[in-house]
Image 1 (cartoon, helix red, strand yellow):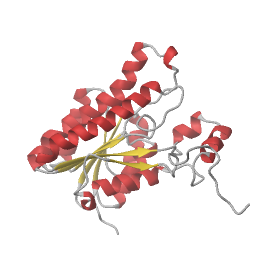
Image 2 (tube, helix red, strand yellow):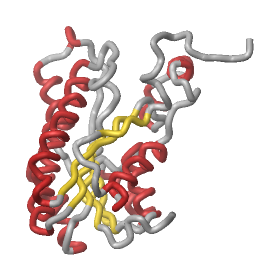
Image 3 (cartoon, helix red, strand yellow):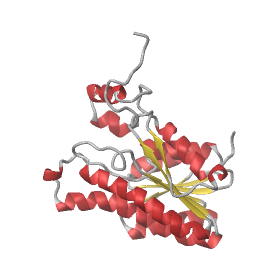
Length: 256
């Protein structure tokens, strides 16, 4: 099936690299009219050029930047059908080493950014009487965690709570609100920040035996953005290769 987003206007925030870029590419393949946003101005502009779409430099932790990104979509196309807020940061810090400023920065981008994006998109979607709001959560926080991700885990659990509340509040306006919870996804950041042994250990913990790809995650976003998901709201889709399933590390079954 192709053309599932024909004519739909989509704003993808955090689209410069990784999962966000994968979402933008997948939406473009399905006919969406795109505006990309990211704080990484050079990388974001390069992605936008490759896809022949608009780009706006955006720090989603700032209310004014969120409003400007939505305004760009409205100026370019006159409406906004799909919002994807994918921007997020995950510095590795033990809780005992995390300062209040460190904590506030992760909260500002990941959690306040979710609120800022939703609040900015609400006005045009409410006026239209329809819309899709989509957010990148994670299995980290809502289900699992690891040392060094206290602030990140808190924000992703918070995003899931926000999704449920927003879905309830916005339902009367014809707006659905959903999210995707990726597991370990092979992105540029993973390649840059993790060595081969660490990546192998992650692969060994996943029943399907590999890290996910941005396209794996993008396909879930595509479903939630499409008309096929018109009766789906207030939920998240886990995309993790079965990582959450095992009770222990010895889970592989073979003939010997």
